[in-house]
Image (cartoon, rainbow over all chains, first blue to last red; front, side):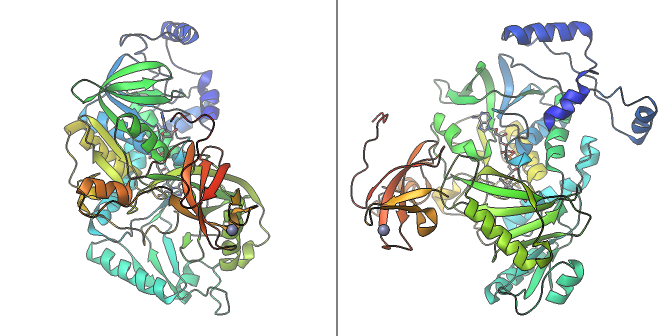
Length: 460
Length: 95
Ligand SMILES: Cc1cc2nc3c(=O)[nH]c(=O)nc-3n(C[C@H](O)[C@H](O)[C@H](O)COP(=O)(O)OP(=O)(O)OC[C@H]3O[C@@H](n4cnc5c(N)ncnc54)[C@H](O)[C@@H]3O)c2cc1C
Ligand SMILES: [Zn+2]
């Protein structure tokens, strides 16, 4: 996907010829070079209606490359490991809000190719505890202005998220969440099954269903966004402010100096010195942190999703069910986007068991009988890092100048802008923002957990 | 779906017959230990990318717990052994 855009733009790059020649010879010899080389940046087109119109009449020929290829410099103020939404977002806010631009974001694959490009894009903030309410609502606040902030359409759509209750336990648990959310000023309300059906007509509310719908929690402010656009928009913005985005370069180890503080990262392209290192590597966090001598309360699990053939608009909102274990929405392309659960075992295989998919589709057909003859087109998996209390770890580590943002498990896409924003604050100032202050690594020693297992029980 | 050999039933069967029960050989310390040791026991797991010693229960068969070593990259079960037996050394193990 990223490469398609790059290919299309390739012929029209606005590098000046000298910079381009310098770049390609460097790339050919794959030489490492000092900070002066390759500072030339493509002039990025500002997207606007006028620009669109101009392009339309000139044959769409002037679009520039959205971010340049970068080769690592010898040293950076900040190295961020992981070019997912969280890592790229942190780079954007570091540059934009803290003026820190001598930054590299390094990924072992292509940017946005991890969970950011694999998730079902549900955005909601109806978690139980005060700490979570502040964190997730901060993200929803930023989602609302994100397209303008990045000059990139992330297609944030407030179509509403409905969480179905099928048992008395569900009803009690959701009502508790609703009361807690309302005390925190977070939008969430209880709807009867008839109201649920009015909001989402395909829903089966018949009493003879195997797991009849008893009602639902409805967060109208919630919705979806275009996942790739989030990664691309942050990458474009960070890159235009001077951040190097280095793709296809696995970080193999985090190095510490004699004083114990972080000194840099070992990569496939050699050692890169860094004053600060920020790990934002989702499923691979514990493997990386291990190389710095920090053991993490994380386990990595496969989580799968699939899409159907595209059809005309039939599905107006997002529906999730913890009890029958499925969640569904319709993308703007028309595909039904369906999320499954995690496998029971830990894994880095980035594919899950077929049995889960069968189970998920059985649940979808149970809730929406009209989809029984839809054909499924694509199926994939991601590796999610899960904490014991299902809340993220976002802040400092026992190693000076090493920061970590992880443990988002099955539900961190929704938090992307909020998390990236407070992570950038933490990296820049060396101290957590008030919003992420409770999400420490120490909470597993002190016992001050933020137990969101009920809010996050279903993968989302 | 992975295939798992139950060392009690001596049969190789689909994963659906089994439930996963987390990392194996996690030893409960004496409760008087430090908070850090207690945290390690409760929450810290090795989560390796590679061979992983883990517990499984043959829930829809004999009902018993046993241990397996599974490669978390390929998901293949490399070997299984009865609960209480020590972790077998596999070819390629460093230690
Ligand atoms: C199938 C599925 C459905 C989901 N649905 C939802 C949903 O509906 N709503 C929601 O809120 N969340 C959802 N999630 C969770 C969400 O996708 C993640 O929590 C979020 O995208 C994490 O973003 P990130 O930037 O931290 O991670 P990622 O996007 O995974 O980025 C981490 C990056 O680190 C890189 N990396 C790892 N190791 C190294 C290394 N050694 N060196 C260099 N780079 C490295 C990876 O290549 C990757 O690009 C879902 C996840 C999956 C898998
Ligand atoms: Zn058995």
